[in-house]
Structure formats: C-alpha cells, structure tokens
Amino acid sequence: GKDLRLSVVVFGASGDLAKKKTYPALYELFKKGFLPRRLQIVGYARTKLTTQELRDRLRGFLDKDTEAVEQFLNACSYVAGEYDTSDGYERLGAALQAWEAAMCVGSALPTSPTAGGSACGPCGGRRLGRLFYLALPPSVYPEVCAHLRAHCATLYGGIPSAGGRTAADGGRGAKGTAPAQLSQGSFVRLILEKPFGHDLATSETLATQIGAHWPEEQLYRIDHYLGKELVQNMLMLRFANPIFSAFFNRHYISNIQVTFKEPFGTEGRGGYFDSYGIIRDVIQNHLIQVLALLTMEAPVSLHPDDIRDEKVKVLRCIAPAAPSDCVLGQYVADQGQPGYLDDPTVPQGSRTPTFAAVRLFVRNERWDGVPIVIKAGKALNERLAAVRIQLRTPPASIFGPLDHMRNELVIRFQPGEAIYAKMVVKKPGLEMDYEMSELDLSYPERYRGVIIPDAYERLILDCIRGDQQHFVRRDELRAAWAIFTPLLHAVDAGGVPLHPYPYGSRGPAAVDPFINDSGYVRTEYT
Ligand code: BG6
Image (tube, rainbow, N blue to C red; front, side, top):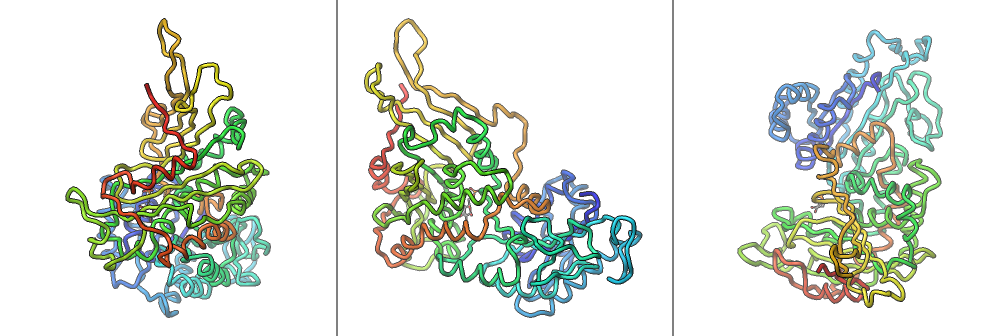
C-alpha cells in the first residue's frame, strides 16, 4: 500500500490501553516498515494536552531506538475534545480532511468533487484510509460512533454512500459503488475493544447502537487472542495435516481442557474487573474463540466470512453452560500476597469470581458427549494459556492398562509457544518397557531467533489491509454470549458457590475432582 495516505486516530489516547498496547503496536509496525510513508497518527481524548506533551508521555512506552522513536513521534499529533459533544469531532474531521488534501497535492485528486478525473481515476490511483481505534470504555461507544459517522467518516474528495456507508471499503458485503472521487480501496474503519456488553441483551443493544452508524464490514472488534501466533496456527494445524484431522472427533477424543492461568491478581484493575469477573473477562471472549477454532468444521475457503461462518455454527452448537457445570473461586491472601478483597479498588464483600472452571458440550455429530472444560483464573501458581486434547486409551491394549498413559495433543499459546503430543514409546534398552514421551515442536527452539509479533501489531495491520478474519463478527459475539448468559445471571444472583483459594495456588480444591469427572486423566511420566 505505498500509495495509501493513512490517518490512524486513537481515541482515549491519554489512557492506559493506548499507551501500553495501541501506540507500541503502531510503533512496531512503523519501525518494521509496515505503515505507509504518508501517515499521521492523531490522538484524541478529553485530557488537555499539547502534541508535544503527548509525545513526551509516549516516549517511555516505546523502545530505545531513538531515531525510529523520534520519526514515529513526528507522525503523532493530538486533538483534545469531548466524547459527547460535536465540537471536537468537527475539529478532528476538518483536520483529517486538511491533512488528506495536503497529502494529495501534486496528485490528480480534484479540489472539488466536480473537478473531473484523470487517467486512472480522479485521484490518480492513490488511496486514502482512516482507521479509528477506540481505546475507550464501551459506555461511550454509542455516542462516539454516532459523532464519528456524522463528522469524521467522509474522506477528502469522498461522499458517504446511501445508508451512511462510505462505499469505498474493501470488505466483502460493501455493496455501494465507490464514489467517483475516491480510489477503489480507500477506506474508513473502526476498531473496537471488549467488553461488548455485560450479557446477551446488553451486548445486542450495544451492537444495534453501533450498527446504526457503522456497517459490519467497517467494524473490527478486537479479541487480541485471535492475534496470537499459535491461535492463528490452529487453522493450519487442523486443516493442513490429515494426521490431526483424522482423530479430531468424539470417537478418539476423551476430553478437552482449555486453560488460562495468571500468576497475578487484579492489582489496581479491580474497579473494572469487579463488574465483569473472570467469565466475562477472558472466558466468554478469548477462550471461547480458541474453542471455536479448535472445534469448528473446515471452512469453505479462507475468506474471513467463510471462517467466521464456521465459528458461528459451532458456537451455536454449544449448549448454554449450566450452573451445575461450573466451579467458581476467589483468591484470598497468602504468603504475603493480598487477597482479591484486599485490593482497594474492589468493593467490600464482593462475590465476583476470579477463577472459573466451566464444562461445555458441543452438541453436534463430531463432538457430542466430549466434555470440554474451560478453566481460567487470576492469582494462580503460573502463567499459562494452553489447550489440552486428551485421547481415549487404545482399545484392547496388548500392553495392559494404559489409562494413565494417554495420548495428548497440547497447544501452548504462552509462555513459550509449543505444540506437542504425548506418546507412549518403548523405553530405550534391552527390556520391553514403555514410558511417556513427546513429539515436540517448541517454537523457541525450532524458530530460534524468530521474533513473534505482538497480537495487537498483527491485528492493526490486518485492519489496515482490510482482512476481518481475526476480528469478531456480530453473530459470533451473540452466539458466545448465548452460551454464558444464563450462567452469568445465576452467578450474579449468588446462585453458584464461590470457593476461596490461596493467592499463588492451583485454584480451589474443588476443581480437581470437577476436572476428573470430565474424564481428564493426569498422564504419568515414569
Ligand atoms: C485481557 C483481560 O483481555 O486479557 C486481562 O482483560 C488479562 O484480565 C489479559 O490479563 C490476558 O492477556 P494475555 O495476552 O496476557 O494472555
């Protein structure tokens, strides 16, 4: 996209997410040469800052390559404005148009929409792009989306098409024709972050409010797990390797475990976390996305909508989680570490779960009867995100009982990306003994020196390229909420017991029997 003139507008530019994730990801893309040369990154927030003050704040979050940092910061500017009144958006819209006009000087882009065309279209084949990144609390999404559409969605020389759509958008389903003044491939896109609602009904309301101004093909809902290397690898692993696809069904697989563990608590984020809890924070989004990719059928093609169609289909086959199929926990102080309720940002006496294990079933021909346990918790003994697919024992084993030596396929997303399969092998030596070993693809060893890009970096680049594959479509979101909403309502009403567990432990004691009841057998290494 060398011909692209790109404006990225970061809403909430003075906030935490922007500083820690959005700007550093943009910087990495810039440094690696993935952003166009004609680029501006405009920060927008309520805080009264000058451009220089924003740059000074950002410097500490970028790396030590001072030349690249300074070049990047030169592209960054700042506009202070409110979210709920039109004034700031009008200024922003005018500034975007002025920049785009300046970037088109010397090209054939007409100064007025009626000025006529040139050899390869009125703008000389050059493209304009605007990407709005909302690093904001979702409570302001509806008004921000409305104002953005009204004041900032018209590219220089472009006119919005019928229904408020800017027609020149690359996504499939953009039905309008490109306005004559814009090059094909010019775009206006919006990136949004979770939380998308609190349950099915509130999520639907929010989606409708946003959808009134922004069509689905311009919306990029981030779930940063979809930007992780091994999450992205699952499609290839499953559908490019018959060795794996052959056993991916109820006839061979006994149970599946999806695990997320963090060794730290809410630590100052308790205000946000307490009104959501662990199920909304990571299970309903990140882990259910992983599960969808793991259990879906092969898509018709790699087109983003074909892939997302399959994810929706399998999500709709998952029966709503039952309160009886759930173990909840909340961490308490241990060994000098504070309990959840000791966090000053957490309301006193809160019963919000910081740990949950939920058993799900995919009711379709491939998976019916295979228990799938999603387990997630904060303040546990380690950092880990992984999927563990445990196979059945071989029928009529000629080696005697092998129940504690089951095959397992493990995909570890972090730390240390790895794919490995636990296998029974003959123990080397004169005796006919056996033991568990592994076929091991460990990325730090196999891809030594390869730097795996950060999820945000990858997803922002996808958005610039107009690839929605790794973004959550509205119907996926709806299907994911449908699975958890009845359970969440029961949890919110205090209808599910909450077990305390010590900070730094493996979670509540009740979880081991729960997982064993799901058919999981801890494999033994001799
Ligand atoms: C976020 C959650 O979405 O994901 C956090 O809000 C959690 O609570 C984080 O810590 C985990 O992301 P990662 O990439 O560190 O596994």
